[in-house]
View 1: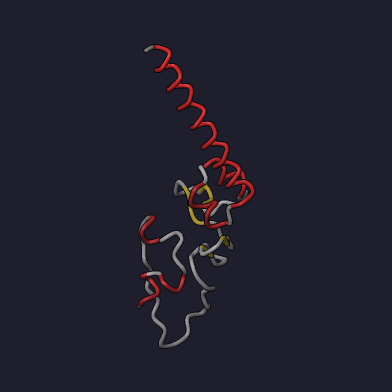
View 2 (view 1 turned 120 degrees about the vertical axis):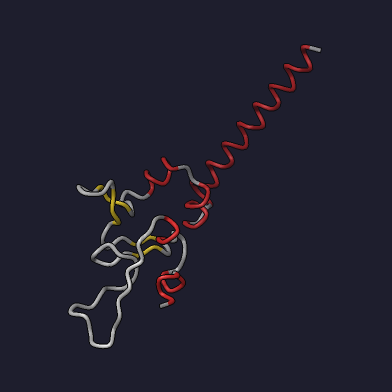
Amino acid sequence: MKKHILNFGLILLITFLIGELAARFFLAFVANDTQFTKYASYQQLQSKHTRQRLTPSRYLSYTTTPNYSYILNKHNSLGFRGEEIEFPKPKNVYRIVCLGGSTTYSEGVNVNDLHSRLF
């Protein structure tokens, strides 16, 4: 009985090891950027993308990085998502600021599909 349990444990360990190696191979050599972003660990993402979308801030714990661009996330020169903001404000143009967290930022959503662009 002990031999069967030991064999089962060994087979299970080998199966997990093969799965881990296959996943690492997939991420390193097969996955496109979208798949890599979806399945990679935080450490793998940091090592692949040296320029982060968030920057440490003196007044806040962090803020968005100006001129950042990766897949669907694009920041303008002020660090806001979207196109450059025209200064001074043109007549008959209303500007609405949306404040919030990750749901307002909507990572992975096209800039034109953000709820803040619906206004």
